[in-house]
Length: 418
Image (cartoon, rainbow, N blue to C red; front, side, top):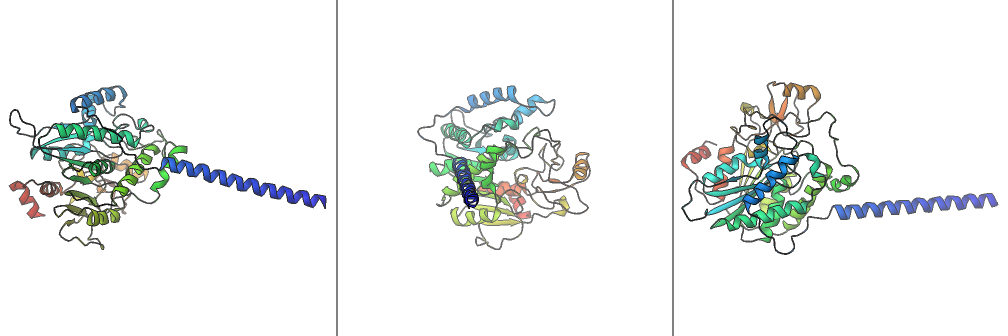
């Protein structure tokens, strides 16, 4: 009898210990999630502008010391990754440019994202500037300690600096994570005249909420040195899990802001088969929240079932066999076919595209390839990442119309042809 009672007591104690362990695990996990998954905070108090020239010089100096160079052209790599400025072609002596735009890159990327867009805007009278977000442009490991608030601070400082350096309207533009950061600034500063959004990272694919928790226990999804390239001369190919966690925090903040309408003009570009983003959500947000009649969404893909804005949403096919394009990608919407690195004949081909080892080697060895978003495959074809946009000139014309710029005759011709 005593033995039975003792066994019962031991079982009861074990059950209690298991229950306590589960509770402790849930409390610890919950506290990690609450802390790590909190949205990007608001900037408190005044933000002191830092002149662009000072900011650019300081950033270049840091990059010279910390950059892990990918080829022998060190100066070229520095300038490709550094904050960039394009001056408008004609400004009257003693006057400031009449309008300006600040462009913010995405996670793992660099100011090279706007090499083509920036030149087009400068040619139309904009003072164009880009920023380099902390943790970028040097070595992917430098992103392990980066925070969304650090990114946010750079955007606020340079948006303030740009506003003081132009006489008139200031616009903001962003790609992916950069779109989240400029959305935050725009909602807090109604003087912003409008937005330019390329593949905006408002909502990514399922399970993105796990990134903050994973970042606490596993710094890398793919550990550097496992035979996968880590970076190229202009972007990271492998990002620490903290990078994804900080991106997630910016997206949570963006979705909170988007509970209210944004009533200024918005130009937005989305590829239906984007492997990163929830494109159905992006379409709904454009139709429901970006309410200005001049706003336009360019949708590369098939006509969406939930389409209600037949005038403001412009649809173009993204399967273009004549260009060896199977589908559009997250990043490809930004670049002209003539881009020296990413264009149709560009020198930088991205073969890390979800393909197997043999296909990747064939791509790297210069085989004839097709182009697609990440992870797409088709029997008998080798697919590199699509890094250019055959519709780039037409897309630019639509963007300029949203920004209140009358297209040039050559651009009108391009629009009519498409």
